[in-house]
Image (cartoon, rainbow, N blue to C red; front, side, top):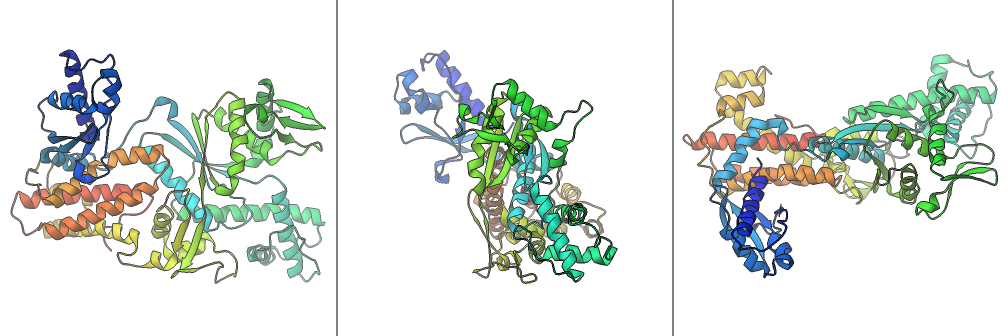
Length: 575
């Protein structure tokens, strides 16, 4: 049982005892939920239950708090209690219960902090990045890749069943425009005087694709009609660009359970029905579809949207919204409890109509949209607008090539998604404490170095050779059940308090879709370890102090590695 649960159990027992002996006259005993005080000097945990009971008990909150404190059973969890302000009950934990955190972390290892969630919210479809396959991913896409992947990792650790999905926008006019853009560059490179149309993709990568086609196939497509060549190049360029996107996302450590093709929504099944026709029929059955001026409309205004939305134009062409309708219906038909979409902030006005379509089918609240702000790229404080290599936008691949995956991911996750990211390339490359990812990784590597130094030469060589893992080495150095009672130094207690926060932090970060909190937590934990390392001798101490402090360092290593892993960042054993 976690420390918080033990405390809540004690407060609950006190409430029950007070009601039973008549000290509190209440009909319902509230949840004794606890929270962290904003000021650490007020203790480790605080309860507002006395304030919440005042009206029901017809007593002043401070008097209720006193009754609760007097009825708390004898225990080894609480070192002291204090009634503060209008009726807060502040608890300070005993050293002995904090020492159990070290033991728990080392026993549970990668499973430390795992949680559970309500059944109705368990199966989640998380869709993110979902870029058009008409160009390379840019730096902004890198933020969605890091955010979506970290969100999935954190939510899984908290108990959700998360299915990650990339929606490939491979249907519609933008694909024809892409194919035609490559076709024009192809003909130009073969010496034809052909102008690029106003509606086109003008990046240098389009010319690169055309040059690759010529190198591979020569003038094979030159004699085709413009339409035939456009269609052929549309498919060639599409496959190449999708492969490019998959490659860089793979390098980022971002993986998807499914790459969902928009085109598949329009492919008929054996009965001749498509995902589009099924979703439309389901919406019509609920009375939310009507015909007007030859077009097919969604009666979204009846569900709170500012106006109704066109699904099928008068000329029979499907709108982009129709594809989204079909896609989200398909998701729900696959059995998900909840849908989360990560979108750029410029899509804010699109949210309501999408929420309405889920409500129309009878799934109100099933769609959640997380909006994200832009990434501002800098180099030594100077804004970076263009790629040095191409003179165009800086691609995600170029950024990763220069600063690495870990720095890219960590800095992309360092702020809430609703805040812009100022990403300084030179800071990301630094190997000192000014670089937050280096600072955290160095703390982890420092602990690994400490454990290697504590080991006998044979075990140290086995670790170097990869024959013995760091977990195995740590357990050989300090077996489970070792005496930890000497861990009473303020720097040691601070580390244990911080590790005790991990499970609650993961649950909150998952609930709020806020993996950025793990970056702050990891930096705080690293700082506390560095302080402990400075204040407390380890290897020069006699047993049991030496072993207890090695165990504390090892527990810190485990939680640091877990925090980094949930962010999709590596935890190096050497730096």
